[in-house]
Image (cartoon, rainbow, N blue to C red; front, side):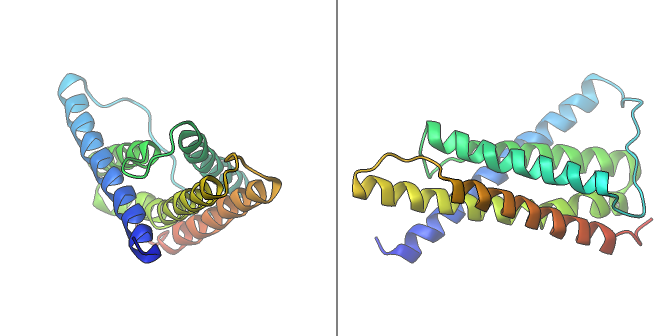
Length: 175
Protein backbone atom coordinates (compact mmCIF):
# COMPACT_ATOMS: atom_id res chain seq x y z
CA UNK A 1 0.00 0.00 0.00
CA UNK A 2 1.39 3.39 -0.96
CA UNK A 3 1.64 6.20 1.56
CA UNK A 4 -1.00 8.49 -0.08
CA UNK A 5 -3.47 5.60 -0.09
CA UNK A 6 -2.94 5.03 3.62
CA UNK A 7 -3.33 8.75 4.31
CA UNK A 8 -6.59 8.88 2.36
CA UNK A 9 -7.91 5.82 4.18
CA UNK A 10 -7.20 7.39 7.56
CA UNK A 11 -9.04 10.57 6.57
CA UNK A 12 -11.91 8.59 5.06
CA UNK A 13 -12.29 6.42 8.17
CA UNK A 14 -12.16 9.50 10.39
CA UNK A 15 -14.86 11.15 8.25
CA UNK A 16 -17.03 8.03 8.34
CA UNK A 17 -16.69 7.86 12.14
CA UNK A 18 -17.81 11.50 12.33
CA UNK A 19 -20.82 10.84 10.06
CA UNK A 20 -21.88 7.82 12.12
CA UNK A 21 -21.61 9.93 15.28
CA UNK A 22 -23.61 12.72 13.64
CA UNK A 23 -26.34 10.24 12.76
CA UNK A 24 -26.44 8.98 16.35
CA UNK A 25 -26.51 12.58 17.62
CA UNK A 26 -29.47 13.35 15.36
CA UNK A 27 -31.34 10.30 16.62
CA UNK A 28 -30.58 11.24 20.23
CA UNK A 29 -31.81 14.80 19.65
CA UNK A 30 -35.14 13.73 18.19
CA UNK A 31 -35.66 11.09 20.87
CA UNK A 32 -34.92 13.75 23.52
CA UNK A 33 -37.54 16.01 21.92
CA UNK A 34 -40.14 13.26 22.12
CA UNK A 35 -39.31 12.42 25.74
CA UNK A 36 -39.25 15.89 27.23
CA UNK A 37 -39.82 19.55 26.55
CA UNK A 38 -36.98 21.96 25.88
CA UNK A 39 -34.89 22.94 28.83
CA UNK A 40 -35.05 26.45 30.22
CA UNK A 41 -31.35 27.12 29.69
CA UNK A 42 -30.60 29.76 27.12
CA UNK A 43 -27.14 29.93 25.57
CA UNK A 44 -25.55 33.36 25.51
CA UNK A 45 -24.28 34.63 22.17
CA UNK A 46 -22.16 37.74 22.11
CA UNK A 47 -20.91 39.98 19.34
CA UNK A 48 -17.24 39.58 20.27
CA UNK A 49 -14.84 36.94 21.51
CA UNK A 50 -13.41 37.77 24.92
CA UNK A 51 -10.20 36.44 26.40
CA UNK A 52 -12.31 34.17 28.61
CA UNK A 53 -14.07 32.77 25.53
CA UNK A 54 -10.74 32.18 23.78
CA UNK A 55 -9.28 30.40 26.83
CA UNK A 56 -12.41 28.23 27.10
CA UNK A 57 -12.13 27.34 23.40
CA UNK A 58 -8.42 26.60 23.78
CA UNK A 59 -9.07 24.33 26.77
CA UNK A 60 -11.94 22.52 25.05
CA UNK A 61 -9.93 21.99 21.85
CA UNK A 62 -6.96 20.77 23.88
CA UNK A 63 -9.19 18.25 25.67
CA UNK A 64 -10.49 16.93 22.33
CA UNK A 65 -6.93 16.47 21.03
CA UNK A 66 -5.72 14.82 24.24
CA UNK A 67 -8.70 12.46 24.17
CA UNK A 68 -7.74 11.42 20.63
CA UNK A 69 -4.23 10.62 21.85
CA UNK A 70 -5.49 8.66 24.87
CA UNK A 71 -7.98 6.67 22.78
CA UNK A 72 -5.34 5.90 20.17
CA UNK A 73 -2.79 4.98 22.84
CA UNK A 74 -5.21 2.50 24.40
CA UNK A 75 -6.34 0.90 21.15
CA UNK A 76 -4.40 1.88 18.01
CA UNK A 77 -6.95 1.49 15.26
CA UNK A 78 -7.59 3.25 11.99
CA UNK A 79 -10.98 2.02 10.87
CA UNK A 80 -12.97 3.48 13.76
CA UNK A 81 -12.16 6.68 15.62
CA UNK A 82 -14.31 6.93 18.79
CA UNK A 83 -13.40 10.54 19.50
CA UNK A 84 -14.53 11.69 16.05
CA UNK A 85 -17.61 9.52 16.57
CA UNK A 86 -18.27 11.38 19.84
CA UNK A 87 -17.54 14.77 18.27
CA UNK A 88 -20.01 13.99 15.48
CA UNK A 89 -22.72 13.17 18.03
CA UNK A 90 -22.01 16.33 20.04
CA UNK A 91 -21.89 18.57 16.95
CA UNK A 92 -25.11 17.27 15.44
CA UNK A 93 -26.97 17.39 18.75
CA UNK A 94 -25.75 20.97 19.30
CA UNK A 95 -26.67 22.20 15.83
CA UNK A 96 -30.12 20.63 16.01
CA UNK A 97 -30.75 22.09 19.46
CA UNK A 98 -29.70 25.59 18.35
CA UNK A 99 -31.70 25.28 15.09
CA UNK A 100 -34.78 24.15 16.97
CA UNK A 101 -34.49 26.85 19.63
CA UNK A 102 -33.10 29.84 17.71
CA UNK A 103 -33.26 29.11 13.99
CA UNK A 104 -30.97 28.16 11.15
CA UNK A 105 -29.02 31.42 11.13
CA UNK A 106 -27.98 31.07 14.78
CA UNK A 107 -26.98 27.47 14.14
CA UNK A 108 -24.80 28.61 11.23
CA UNK A 109 -23.25 31.29 13.40
CA UNK A 110 -22.44 28.96 16.28
CA UNK A 111 -21.70 25.57 14.73
CA UNK A 112 -19.94 26.38 11.44
CA UNK A 113 -16.93 27.97 13.18
CA UNK A 114 -16.54 24.81 15.27
CA UNK A 115 -16.78 22.49 12.28
CA UNK A 116 -14.26 24.41 10.18
CA UNK A 117 -11.72 24.80 12.98
CA UNK A 118 -11.29 21.79 15.23
CA UNK A 119 -12.62 19.01 12.98
CA UNK A 120 -9.92 19.26 10.29
CA UNK A 121 -7.29 19.69 12.99
CA UNK A 122 -8.57 16.59 14.81
CA UNK A 123 -8.36 14.57 11.58
CA UNK A 124 -4.84 15.87 10.93
CA UNK A 125 -3.78 15.06 14.51
CA UNK A 126 -5.19 11.54 14.21
CA UNK A 127 -3.26 11.06 10.96
CA UNK A 128 -0.05 12.21 12.66
CA UNK A 129 -0.64 9.75 15.52
CA UNK A 130 -1.18 6.94 13.03
CA UNK A 131 2.06 7.81 11.25
CA UNK A 132 4.01 8.01 14.51
CA UNK A 133 2.60 4.67 15.68
CA UNK A 134 3.57 3.04 12.38
CA UNK A 135 7.13 4.40 12.60
CA UNK A 136 7.49 3.24 16.20
CA UNK A 137 6.24 -0.26 15.42
CA UNK A 138 8.49 -0.62 12.37
CA UNK A 139 11.49 0.47 14.44
CA UNK A 140 10.51 -1.84 17.31
CA UNK A 141 10.06 1.06 19.74
CA UNK A 142 7.32 1.78 22.25
CA UNK A 143 4.72 4.33 21.17
CA UNK A 144 4.76 7.22 23.62
CA UNK A 145 4.44 10.96 23.62
CA UNK A 146 7.45 13.27 23.84
CA UNK A 147 7.75 16.91 24.85
CA UNK A 148 7.69 18.05 21.24
CA UNK A 149 4.42 16.12 20.77
CA UNK A 150 2.92 17.95 23.75
CA UNK A 151 4.01 21.27 22.27
CA UNK A 152 2.57 20.23 18.89
CA UNK A 153 -0.78 19.42 20.56
CA UNK A 154 -0.84 22.78 22.36
CA UNK A 155 0.00 24.63 19.14
CA UNK A 156 -2.76 22.77 17.26
CA UNK A 157 -5.24 23.72 19.98
CA UNK A 158 -4.14 27.36 19.76
CA UNK A 159 -4.50 27.32 15.96
CA UNK A 160 -7.99 25.82 16.23
CA UNK A 161 -8.91 28.49 18.79
CA UNK A 162 -7.70 31.31 16.54
CA UNK A 163 -9.56 29.91 13.52
CA UNK A 164 -12.74 29.33 15.51
CA UNK A 165 -12.60 32.80 17.09
CA UNK A 166 -11.97 34.40 13.69
CA UNK A 167 -14.87 32.52 12.11
CA UNK A 168 -17.11 33.36 15.04
CA UNK A 169 -16.33 37.04 14.54
CA UNK A 170 -16.82 36.70 10.78
CA UNK A 171 -20.28 35.19 11.35
CA UNK A 172 -21.24 37.73 14.04
CA UNK A 173 -23.30 39.72 11.51
CA UNK A 174 -25.88 36.90 11.56
CA UNK A 175 -28.77 37.82 13.82
